[in-house]
Amino acid sequence: MTGQHDAIVVGAGASGGLAAALLCESGLSVLLLDAGSKYPFWRKPLSKTVAATIGAISDPRLANILHPRLINAGTKVLRGIGRVRQPVQTECFAWVQKPDGFVDDCDHPYETPDGMPFTWIRSHGIGGRMVVPGHGRQYYRFGATDIGPKEDGPSPWPFGIAELEPWYQQVERRLGLTGGQEGIGYIPDSLIAQPASPDASEEMVLQAIGEKWPEAPAMLSRYAPPVDFTGIADTTGRLILRTRAIAQRILAGPDGKARGVEWLDPLTGQRESAQAPLVFLCASSLESTRILLNSGTAEGPLSDQLPALGRYLTDHVMIKAEGMSPPLPMMPQAEAGRCVYLPRFDLRDGGDAQHRGYGVQLYATVNPAGAWTTAVAFGEVAPSAGNRVTLSKEKTDRWGAPALRIEMQWGDAERALASSMSHALDELFETIGAKVLVRPSGPANPGTSVHECGGARLGADAQTSVLTPQNECWAMPGLYVTDGASLPSQGIQNPTLTIMALTARACAHALTQAA
Image 1 (cartoon, rainbow, N blue to C red):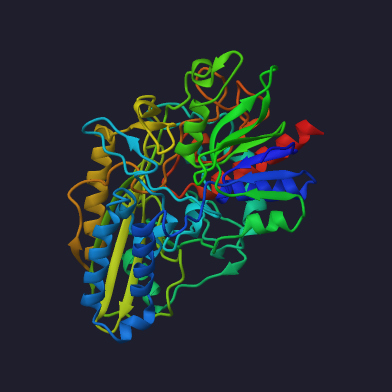
Image 2: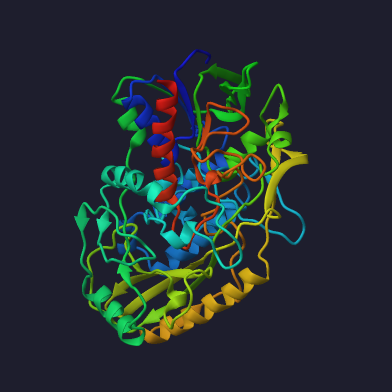
C-alpha cells in the first residue's frame, strides 16, 4: 500500500487508537498501522493448536464436568508446549486466557546481557495489551509528587501537573470510569461515570486496613472496559486501517520533517510505505524506541542527533504474594480491573512523599471455603541513563531487521524498595487474616509488571530528551511519540491514563500546528 494521507498512526493500542479517533474526528484522513496478523493454520500449527485447546479448557462449562485439578494440570501442560514458540510470553499470568493475543518470541526475539534478564510482554492487534483478558484495565492520574522533584534529583518533567488537568478530563469522559472520588492526594480524583461502593467482602478488608493503619489511604480501583477507539475513528469515514504492518522506520523529507512510514508485511515479507506530513508513533514503549533507533534524517541517524534516545528506560519494581484467608461474604462475579487499591502504602506509618514509594493492589476470589487473595505491589523506579535499549549487532527478527538489546537491572535502591514491599505484604496479609502461601524471595524481573516506560522521553532540551514538551521529536518535526516511551518518569500507578492524556494533548498541538 502506498499513498498520501493527512496523518499516519503507528499502533492501535490505548494511545494509537485514541490518536486515530481524535485526528479523524478533527477532519484528517488517517492511515492506522497495526502489526497484528492472522496467520493461516499451516503457518503456525503449534501455536494455533495450543490456543484452541487453551480456549476449550478455559470454557467455564468445563468446570461442571472436570475436577479443577485436572483442568489446572492440562493448563500447565499446554503452557509448557507454548514455551516452544513463546518462552517469554508464557511468563505472563494472562497468557493462558489468550495465547494468540501475544507475539511469537521466535519470530520477534530480543537480547539481554548476561545476568540482566528482562521480561518483555508484547501483544500485536487492535486494542494492544488493553484487550488481553486479565489485563488490569485500571486508570489513575499522576499527582504533583509523581512528576515533581524527588529526594534523589530534580523532576525531568518540563511542566507541572496542572498542565495535564484538561487532558485527563477529556480522556476520562471517553473512558467512562467506574470508581469513586476519595480526595486522596497521591491519586487525584478523576471524573467518574459509574460510582462504585465496596461490596461486603471489600468492606471487611477496607475496615481491617483502616483500623490497623488509620493514616493509610485505601480505595476501590478506577477501571473501565476497553474502548474501541479504532471503531470510533472508522465511523468518521476518514480511517484506513492496515493490519499486518510491522513498522520499520519513520521516513523524513529533505527538510528533516516527518514524511511517512515504512513497514513490513509479516505474511509476504514485502516492505511498503505511505506518506503523510504528520506521524503519531504509538507502537508501545520499546517498539516505538526500536523504530526511532532505526530512523534518521539527512543529518544522520536519530540516535546520533539525540543522545537520550534509548535511555532512561523505567518499569515498576513488582512483588506479588498469594494466599488464603478465612471465609468472606460471597460477592458478585468480579469485574475486570476491580480491586482494593492502597496508594502510597509505604506511607502508612508516616514518611515523606518525596521519596519513591509503592502502592498495592489487592484482589480476592471468594468462595464458601475461603478466599484466594492476591496482592501485587508496584514500586517507583528512578529514571537512569544506564537503563537503556539499543539495536543488536548480532540478533535479527525473522525478517532480518535488527532486534532490540535491552539493558536494565535493579540497583541497590530498587532492591531495598522491594524488600520493604515484601515486608509490607506480609503485614497486609496478617492484618486481613490471610496466610501467605506463594511469595517469591525477591522482585520480579524488569518488564514483568508490563508497565515499562521511557526510551524516548519528553523534556526541556534535545540533549537530555527525545521529544519536546508537546511530545514532538526534536530532530524530526511532525513526528509525535505519545505512548509509554515518552514518559520521563512514572509514579506508583498504572501509567495508561497519563499516556492517553499526553496523546490527547499532543493531538491538539499537532492540529494547531497544521492549521
